[in-house]
Length: 344
Image 1: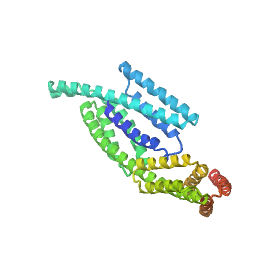
Image 2: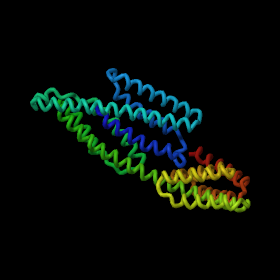
Image 3: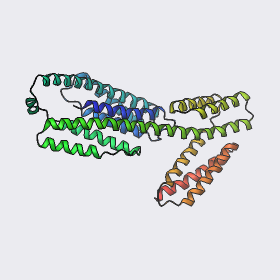
């Protein structure tokens, strides 16, 4: 049973998913990705559990399924806070199960090794276990890795793995189970390296997205500071905002960026400066939509140029505190972009 590989998948999925949900200030807007990740982990664990599994493992698995169901319900209700909590709980439970299974497999492997040391080589070959199930589970895992590699636009070459899978199946067809198990071990070694490469790429892209979001937020903060000055707010408020801006501009890693943005949000709430937050959020969404449309063939680029100019006008309105004008332009621009999307 290849629980070590399954555990590796959980760590990979959890590391990316947890980073995304914990730092959801700059993560994807669609929380349904959490449900997909949780169900993927659930399926991986389910493949490892049988009727002979310990009752504690079965109990934990049922608890994990329950959290996945709660996660799905929270998403339907647009309850992102509960969705986050149930996602983290489910992933924690599935990881714990995988650790238990991994420990059991380690003991079984040690026992098998001890027996093999006392058994002639020819006898061991003749009684080798058919690794078909392990290879099948590993193939599912590698397919998931391929999807992640494509998602993060890596240049990872899976051709060697594909050839090894083909070889292992041929060996099984020829009843060469010992050779197939050796091929399986080679596949596992390559998978570990690919897993590591994808994690590193995901972390790098996460850091880049955080920096890009920080830059966008600095632009918002500049407009907020200017508005605060025009409204004649106290030097205390202005100084807090300017210090917060300086700290955010110097933040380098995602965790620090999230922490500084949370501090800014706290300052805004403390001094009731959240009036234009909804408008600023819509500006970010519009920018994202324009960027997505610019990557699609067939979209009139001149229209997108006009849209960008309109967006700059909206930002100037926000800078000057003309929220009603900004709001009206945002509505018109959002409607125009929606019409473009519907025409594709």
